[in-house]
Image (cartoon, rainbow, N blue to C red; front, top):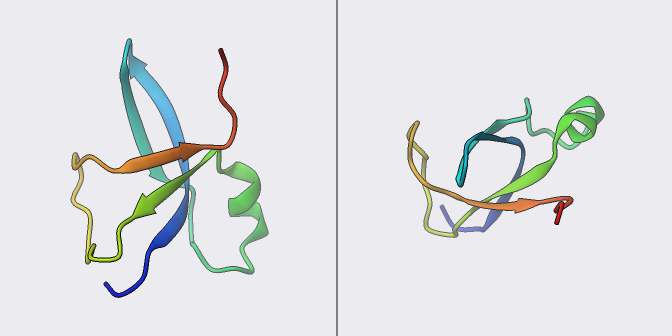
Length: 66
């Protein structure tokens, strides 16, 4: 808590209109392989201390297909 976080993640569609997201790996800035695997940012609010499995989060995809 105390600052907004942008974690690198991998979002996948699991059903029509339903998505799942997980961390792409270690979030350290020197982890370039994680950056290459990620396809989104997981946005954690300034007040967020932890996220439990199954909890809804905000996701900002790097690319959107229309």
